[in-house]
Length: 114
Length: 117
Image 1: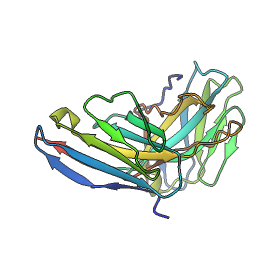
Image 2: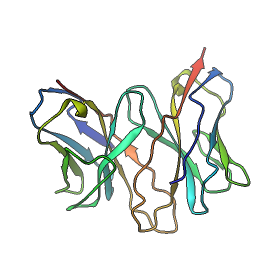
Image 3: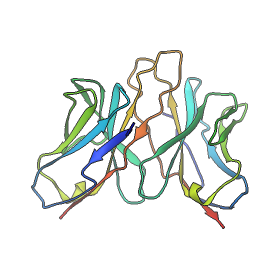
Image 4: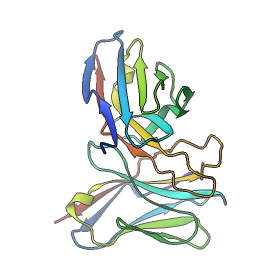
């Protein structure tokens, strides 16, 4: 799986957009970008994923650069409850092989301040 | 719909003792996983299962055994606990999806905090 690089920590003011970057310069053509988050003492929670097009759901937006070497997760109106560690993960899509695991790095600790 | 549940939530063991962690899911997922998370670290895959009656090793399987006798349950066993197994254990599950879809997000349980003294 491709390696990802994320800043160790970021701050954001409540109500503002939080933009979390991720570099994945060695991503290959069949690999998706996934984002999960882990609120303190809880299990990780899926947020969003994408291949090459920008994606949006009720939680966040995912912007992937045209060369797919980096992406940004956007929380449009951050709240205090969004304080968590955010993980960017790159992995192949499931296609009958053994690509089951999620490789979690250290992620980015996002702190939303009042 | 409870999602993924784990039992127990906390446990303290002495070195050499054994125990079993239970994971249950009510989403009819085919795949189930056990991860461990050490302080300040990301999650690492211990074992996983792609269906009832099947299991496979992940990144850090040594010292653990698993069983998937029923589709909804995935058990993680420690036969002889060691202090190095002090960790938070997370269970997860996901669908077996058609090849045309990338929708395979994993749903995680709340974790079991295990301390081995």
